[in-house]
Length: 253
Ligand code: MN
Image 1 (tube, protein in one colour):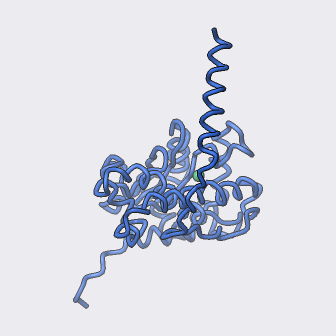
Image 2 (spheres, rainbow, N blue to C red; image 1 turned 180 degrees about the horizontal axis):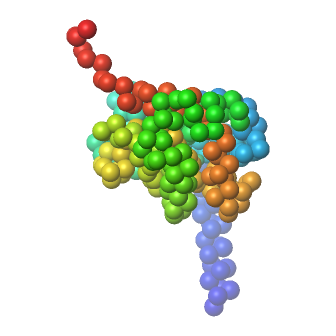
Image 3 (tube, rainbow, N blue to C red; image 1 turned 30 degrees about the vertical axis):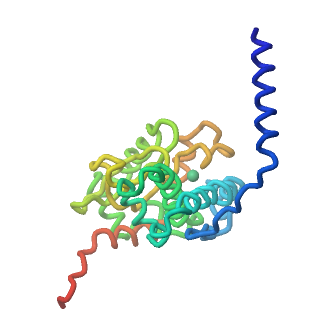
């Protein structure tokens, strides 16, 4: 019985492949979104994050998000003119048939672009704990100490079941919060993530297995600890200062 069922399944699979073989795949759209280059060599983050992981993560995973985002927008020329922030910030206003594709792939594109820029070669940043930056000071003020922040952020990264991200965000009141999202969701996604988890990200950590499995296998905690050695505090602080800056008044002096 079991063998017969397997043989049947095998025959069905062969038939399906044969039936699809003659159809040529439509060429993938090359825009409106494009994959930017990594801001450093793939080996720059070693030994904490290895070159092979960085290459596969950027050249294949991130590329797939960009390609699939472009595919999702093929029939929507008006949406092709929007920025990635406009698309992912307004997921719930998009046509229902492309919402999920933009949520997953637009989120994937935005999250990874941010992630690459928030890392730098060990020693190239401004110090292991953001010392001397406004963000570093705000972290100590908000969490009591850098160690307490690190514990809370690592905890969020560890407790994210399955795939997702840990974030440090500036919330609407200007305060800092550690949050976590599933899949490729992010704290900009109104109507997708709970309001309590929304804000402007200033740190981002990818905890999908594809981000660490080659080097760390199932040891996510080791990857999270290693990631703190490559945090680009200069870039994170720039995001923080932009997020807390008072809005520019139009027409005033
Ligand atoms: Mn990833």
